[in-house]
Picture 1 (cartoon, helix red, strand yellow):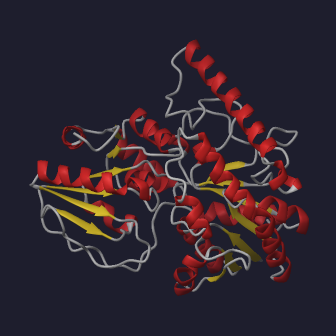
Picture 2 (tube, rainbow, N blue to C red):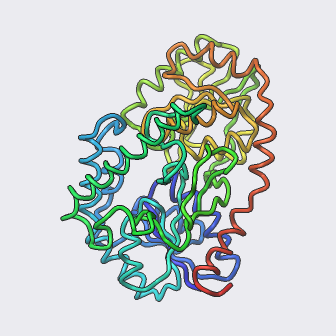
Picture 3 (cartoon, rainbow, N blue to C red):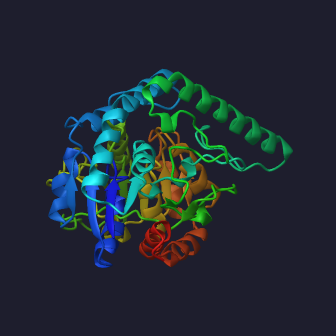
Length: 411
């Protein structure tokens, strides 16, 4: 079949689709990717056909992702970011419709933030699959809601009441935002929910989550949802970093976004390196363009442009990160404890899951984090081997191919 993939040019979304694209190609399917200009050369170097939407200015999506600073706790910034996204929707929907028809696609696979997918699929009659890099972000009618600062599951009726009120507040907020933005939205997205309660921005046929059921808090998932497993390895042509021997080796990353937080993050890592001179701290800059290693600041702090998680994480003893789903799942798969310092979006919810399941610790900031790291590497984490084994049992490529066959009726 002919598979069209639509995803933003962000590592946490697009790069995690690459193993699925490879699996589809190996199965004999034709694959074409519609994404931002910045990632075209990376995909093409891997033998993947890729194009950018004709109406999308170079760097526009990156500007929307980074141009509004911190979003959590700032409703004005969140609304401005949504407005900027919605302003692009009419032209991007037309681009996607044209691509589906000209390329004669049999199925559309769209990342969850590619909001033009539903309208384009409806207008062209092409079946579609939604992929979700962070499944905890899905709306559900039961369980502990996300985006509330990192709530833990309830231990009694007060917590269940809290969860119910939180879900009601989020439903009301969704309705209000869609009503406020209706003039900017395609008619297919005029309401946030379908009559059956499912979200209109996700496929009613198949929603594939890149996560682990074992990691999530109890909740009722959408009927179309399937957890296909952790897809967290960052594809990289870079060689492994040249690391000196050290008593302890710690990897640190703030992901590929959050540019507004990088100066404070770097300062915190430098303080950690000075506090623990016998430790080696390797910090990723999240630069997808690659580059050389840098050794500025304390001698035991090494900066790398990026790291291939699947290949390189087993060389470390622990991971410090922001709570992005990609690095969180990669640390689990490598059997490494995490010190999570959440900054924005759903990162506090990932931190809550890491701490709740005994897979690491949560911290408010890197200030004074040396003691937390001492505890992280001084204690046993008996849940980690069990979760690592569970991660290894998933077969995301197989389940993706099965979903392709299912939604196209070729199973």
